[in-house]
Image (cartoon, rainbow, N blue to C red; front, side, top):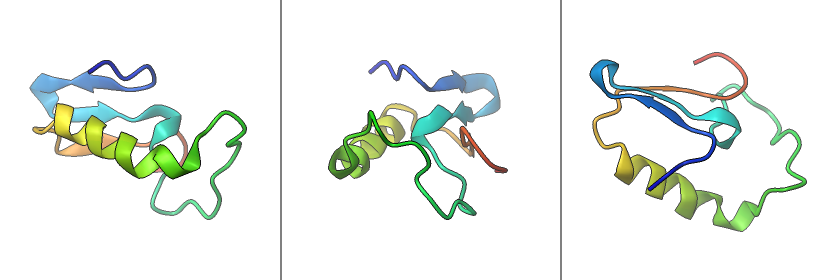
Length: 64
């Protein structure tokens, strides 16, 4: 699977989630004009299943 907004560093077990991944401290979704919100859970599960060895996920906005 190719994630257009994600970058993976496999040797470091790091995934940069881009705008798909929000910080745990986020209180809003931000700009979701292009998003299909009801597909987000399915999409994020696909990303995680394709990067099973990730130990650290860096969100697109906010701290990790």
